[in-house]
Image 1 (cartoon, rainbow, N blue to C red):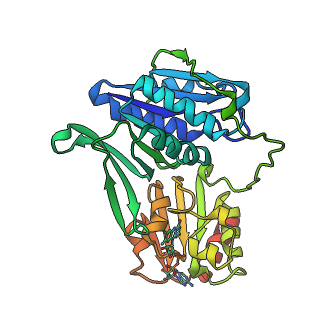
Image 2: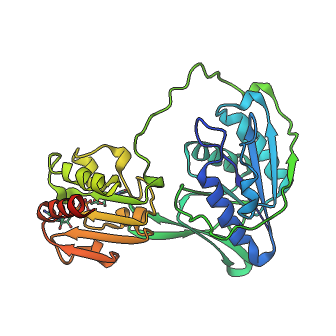
Length: 331
Ligand SMILES: Cc1cc2nc3c(=O)[nH]c(=O)nc-3n(C[C@H](O)[C@H](O)[C@H](O)COP(=O)(O)OP(=O)(O)OC[C@H]3O[C@@H](n4cnc5c(N)ncnc54)[C@H](O)[C@@H]3O)c2cc1C
């Protein structure tokens, strides 16, 4: 068996995106029982400078096509090259990060090679399926997160999926696979590069939820924008990042960059403090893998308590100021 992973650089840098490392770790775990191969495909102006890292996470081989014309996202050209790579390598599975680039390229490739694609998978499992032998179960929330759908591609190859950054944990144990690069020479046509990038203005976000060890998140229960200052104050006292439920974002308490959940960021901090958040399935999808969860909610039956390791039942407007005072005096 063989799994291919689409290699991406972090926007504006020459380094690998975390999701590429996460997918490599996942692909290695999927391939291990079958002694299968994990092969990376990179298409761009030049390989990320830390590509060697991939071999520590279970990559066996990196196939690359460097072309200065592909410094930026030229979807049609990249699609053509990846499709040629797929035809040559015949992987059973192809994984993309559900990034802007992955969401653009993966469906184009799937359409070109006539196979299926499941977007935003939260679990990937290989198992037997009817008389088809071992296939990839592509699992993702569906119908607004109310059910988990298991999607299979029994009759076409490769089986393709995208996964959002942060959804698959980075494996702790690093392997020491030998470094193996292979240059790919596709049939490339300049006419596939159809547009020119005159200027790129990166969107600057001050929020880095993925990197935070501690996140204090506020929900609709915070009440209003003024009270949301309490969430910022608690976060500041803890040296934490500020998160939010979608309801808090929709009410205008805080900007969308802070949203955690199915349609926000997926986070796994050491400590996640959920304040006035009920614990909807869509919110949990973004934070339930946190190492420790503390919930503050006035409703003792709020679903968030079902996944919290620690809970305080009460009015957050009374509890949070006490926490801040304690941290400022004792901390
Ligand atoms: C397709 C889809 C995608 C979605 N994506 C996301 C997503 O990415 N992230 C997300 O969060 N949601 C998402 N949602 C919305 C989700 O379904 C919920 O509506 C949302 O998470 C609810 O936010 P909340 O918990 O802040 O609000 P509520 O559910 O209204 O809960 C507020 C909580 O605050 C408590 N409370 C009230 N006052 C106080 C007080 N003074 N002190 C303490 N506690 C108090 C209440 O008891 C209650 O439990 C999505 C929905 C859909 C359909």
